[in-house]
Image 1 (tube, rainbow, N blue to C red):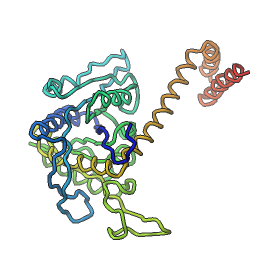
Image 2: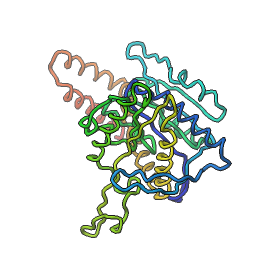
Image 3: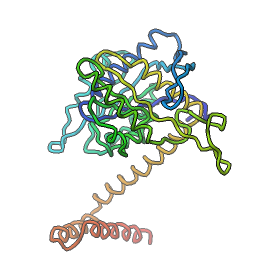
Image 4: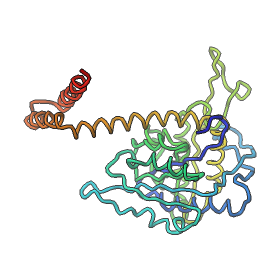
Length: 343
């Protein structure tokens, strides 16, 4: 457990997107590119010159450290059938080259009916990969919609992968998954889709200017000398808009710029200590979620509560009770049982 705020911690990268955006192909292309960095370098961090990625400032050149992990883990979440409960776990099949790499670990898992794009034990699996010595863990979700944002509670950086023609400026302005993304990437910028991909990226760039991220995100402004206004003793900074990048998982176009962007974000969160604070909030989120699951599981397996639930369900079926009222009555039986045991 890191004590120092500036202590380096393993990096967690989450990748989400709608079905058909090319997530598995993209993950393999990015994974092979990342592992290639280590093969071409003797250090874990490469220093290169990259452009400042703030969209509201004049581009300038900065020196940053490009993250080159020794090995990486990929956790793929595959949707489970609502009818049979099974899952084909096909994501690993699409990553044949990456899964055979000696410094990569690819593990597909079923969603098991869990909403939010993750599996039941994804957060635990990420922790295990870090304990096993993986410097980078990539989490690929199932195809998600606008409101499935739980991945943000599991990773350090949320990457939203989009397909060409995936939306206009209004679509990008909608709240939900776009709002929590740290970087947006439009895939398939090649061949006949190139023009459409560029148009999609342009529309999302316009929309990103309307969204606000937490103060200090990307480290755009941190003092009055940088253009921040000071009111009531507090410095109000206008955070940078999330970057919108073009890539092609098929040809490799844009992967270098994307990884430099990710490395810059990682460098900022490590040096500022933001990653430690973010992990604390995430741990609290998962504690309460696991508690809800444990309470529900215990209630379903308790004979007394189960008998009461059968009676309430009969009233529910006959239209004598609304679902919300039925839940309240069932909760009373759980609470009263706990009071009886304490006495």
